[in-house]
Length: 365
Image: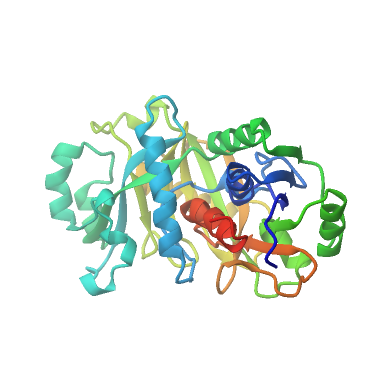
């Protein structure tokens, strides 16, 4: 359709729904946002995710561009000393073998990340300056980790950011309504509501909800589990002289694997220790054996003793597809209908870029 978009219904209140609604409002579109729950509800994947910027499990050629657009905005938050929404944290991805330069993903070339390929011996030397809280060099070597990716990455305080986006949207002059108690049973119901609201566009940002709403058999839940620890608990630092936090991740044995990535993320007031990536596993709680493994990860990566109790645990489901669905729905001929879901493990890495993509599809740029 060629007509300009003046009013839009955005459905979904994860980071993609909120940021997309806000982008539309900023571009002078009157926006109504509806969602089945509040952004901070534990069922919302965005609130429980690590908030760590790095393209992960998102096989789509558009991701690198979306990730860089998101990086641009996150680094602006880092430079704004008046808020604590985003923190720039050194990140280490542990490897057993060195990665050839020609096999590095394109995002590693962004100079703002200060990306390096290091050996553990090089890390030991650099850490005399960085003063990072890390496993000992001997522990890394004994575990078979001799190489690593080292870079600076934004980490989003997810609950704070979601609250900030929600409040900004509510206060925006172009926001008509925010309804966090509306669950749709079908796309037809969405369209009926949009017509009643005089909307000429709908944006579907319902994540895993799209499996039923859209009958999307390509969409699967990538189950993730985490434990949360108090980042300021002095007991965790008794045996460590280093004072600065880092993000530490690995998908390689013995600590990690493709279905059980090991990671520790310093985020806001917490350490987030994970994890798992189990597709089509619908268990909504952390199993006992998973909790034991996560406690081992906390011991390996943060030197937190296994008898220390986590302050919380979380289970969520990443919306996994063979490609991200950010596109116009050509089957909907009576209204502009854009889908924005299926970001896999890269929701917080791409959310700004995908919101800009939605406005492009609606001819607002």
